[in-house]
Amino acid sequence: MRFPSNLEFFARISSTNTNIPPTVHMHMEVEEICRNKGYTTYILQEIAKECYKHGCKPAARCNLENSASKRALLKADFQICGCMLMSDITS
Image (cartoon, rainbow, N blue to C red; front, side, top):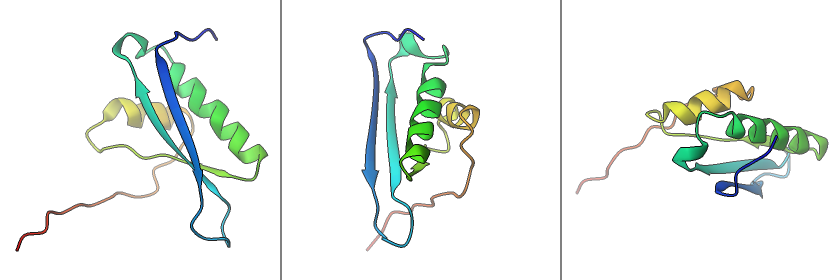
């Protein structure tokens, strides 16, 4: 697959517990011109393969309102495993 030069994708390896496999947390930013072409799904799948090869578990998250990211993650065989709830602290 040929990728445009303005496609950005970042991955960071982190682990907070030595009893579980290291986790690769991914962050993606896709320019408008690169959207809906399958680039992100392909890259997510390839990164996931590499993670498993090296004993890491791929992980990602997105805002509930970000349907494009959710769709790309689900197409790349990621599974929904939870939901983050947030609240503002008032005095």
